[in-house]
Image 1 (spheres, rainbow, N blue to C red):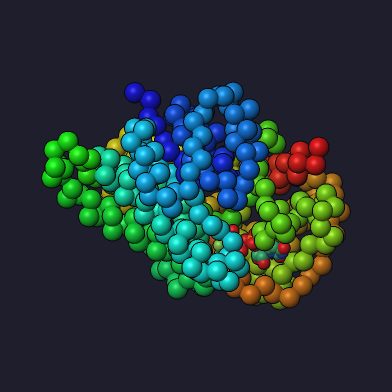
Image 2 (tube, protein in one colour):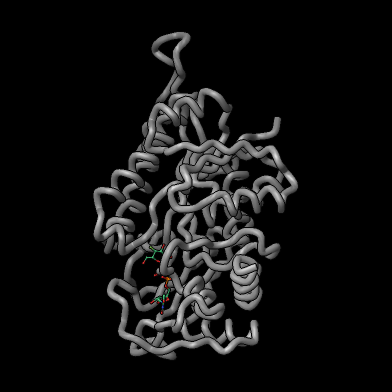
Length: 354
Ligand code: UFG
């Protein structure tokens, strides 16, 4: 029987790319989103890319526990990929309650509904931010987590821990105490720690749609290139790195999406080695901000208006992944070159301007 995968936050940047890959891999996908940080542009793009016009779309706020339970009543859900969360680091510092309430409540509701409907497989979208600043690079999944530097980062750490604890407790869930009522069941979990997702689908039909001034580097670059922003500021050129700018592990969005298919298949095919697993999803290749900017200029034949500016508060000097566990266990590896990724990001920005 074809497996059903619920993608919460499935209309957003990462969620829409993952939905495409899941459908192309033969899964039934149910998209749930409250459209708080996106519109239907990417969902429509997903339908165009896959040719599937009848993908169920449920407009729902995952913080609404009753609505989440109704969703699980209506559909048999074999696995959930949980993206629905706020993600702006700076805003989380200004509005911690909003971040903790949204990011924790929504995840708890998904977990509880999954557990109460006979059990579930849950994939959580975590982040390299859990590693914080570290000298020992690249980071492996065993590298210690550092105290989070923002409420956003803290929600990622807390959700990882919640998932670990729920998985552990759910092992002992047996039959329902009350026949005829909902049945508790085992929960299995995977946390994927993303490094820096960038780029867009090669079709240029889905991509990142930041609201307002972008916080992240690549949308700022593409918006500067198209003339929406005047000048890119490169935050800091006095870091202890080869060219003085920060080092990151930029992972292509389609490669990242494929890692989710590999992880979901591992759960659904009973291939997990532990009931809760963590994988780094990165390339293993550090790229500096300056290198990224010059690669963008070269591959797209554009002269970008940029300047060096003060360091941005909270930025770590360098972080990149050791992705060997994911390479080995998920049989997944990042494949696209940074040039292809930056060309796709530019094609998407131009598509938006059409
Ligand atoms: N940068 C610039 N100019 C900009 C934007 C970014 O120079 O206009 C630099 C940053 O200083 C950093 C690099 O580009 O060195 C990457 O910055 P991003 O904002 O794109 O990404 P981050 O590495 O800061 O963010 C990532 C994830 C977040 C996560 C965060 C934790 O995208 O989800 O790490 O620090 F929360």
